[in-house]
Image (cartoon, rainbow, N blue to C red; front, side, top):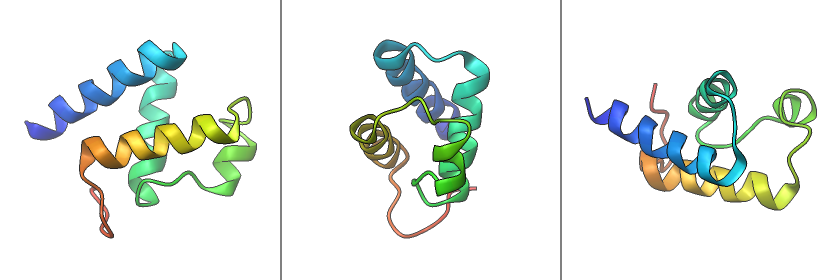
Length: 75
C-alpha cells in the first residue's frame, strides 16, 4: 500500500511540474525503478529526449526522495 501512495505522490509531482500523461508517468517510474532511480542513456535519448538535463536531474532526485532510494532496487 505504501508503494501506491508514493507512486501517487510522484505522479502529482510530474503532473504539476511537467504535465505528463499517465502512460508516460508509468514508463518513467518503471525505468527509474529498474535503474536505481536514474534514467538510462537509452531512455534519455528515446522516450525522454524532450527533457532538459536539469529537468531529468530534478525528476531523478524527486523519485529518489519519494521512494527512498539509496543503493538498492525497489522492484
